[in-house]
Image (tube, rainbow, N blue to C red; front, side, top):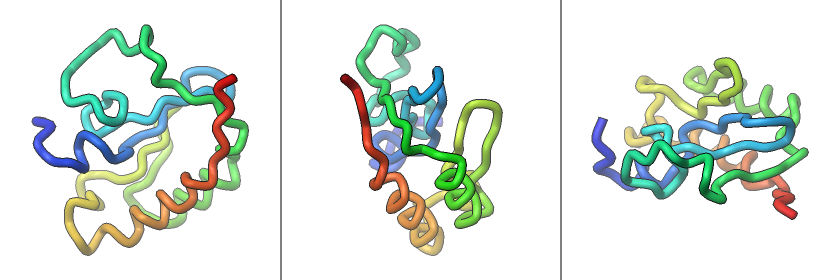
Length: 109
């Protein structure tokens, strides 16, 4: 899939757990938010965040908002092709999910 729109490059699609309390937020092409290239060396870049506030309760709340949100292994997907926020009728649920994520406290010290 080509990274041709703002949503695909700059909006969260997936939050991948990489270790306890450490996550990376990925765009639609499984690249860090804002990346519009296919760089497979992301482990060398400072794109990870540490947070203790992405709790099971918050994850469950996200999963209850949209049928497109799901957990797969260590990744929390915020939407799927059917619930893609590029379609206006899907944006309300996506923005509700972002509202929950905006409350996360990041600890990168």
